Length: 259
Ligand code: V0D
Image (cartoon, rainbow, N blue to C red):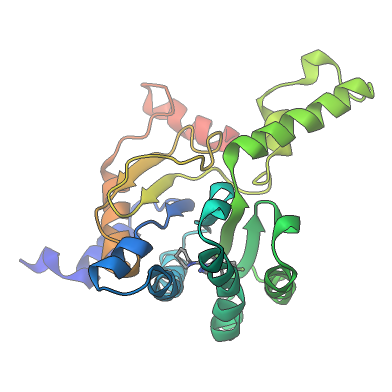
């Protein structure tokens, strides 16, 4: 059947509503490696190629923000050598792909506790940030050393400080004030969450921001994830009826603007 053809499906998807912000939990790199009798780090390394492939495709689709969960605050508990290896990946990724990211007008950003990363990792990311800060294509947002509960703890601390120093009244604390204290305050909320590798959990990822997102899960391991997989997730997204808590189609548009 003609509709099975990738480029026809792509054309159809492009005529419908695209998610502005797609967030992905890139899981299954270790399992991909194990399946091939390779060390776990070989899976992490292969996963980088998928990051490049999916970034290019997301950019072509006109997605505005792609947030990738690369390293959680819990990942420090992994074996030392694995953490050391992971921390070298941003540098390697950027050495290889920064020129084409610049070429493709991609803007590299990061959320998470930057200061606790090794200096060499910080430098690689900071360099990419500076080199792409004026780009206005896809925002490639890496969640690195990120944990949502810690992010929310910091929001509460910040608001407590504003209150204790009489810069705000209790009545000033509302959703928009909380949002303005999140690390994602300058970004739209994710419309679509994807988790690979068959796990059906959020694992402390963007708990506030994902309140209205559509969730999709696939058994595919991250190194095997490809354009076809992302297109499927988007087709799934486009089939769903997003109401943001209302029933009325009219109100849906209004709600989106408020967000
Ligand atoms: C390993 C699969 C790119 C997930 C993808 C340290 C696990 C490959 C980056 C990267 C990781 C991060 C920041 C940046 C540029 C690239 C990355 C980590 C892991 C965590 F500015 N891939 N990648 N970072 N993996």
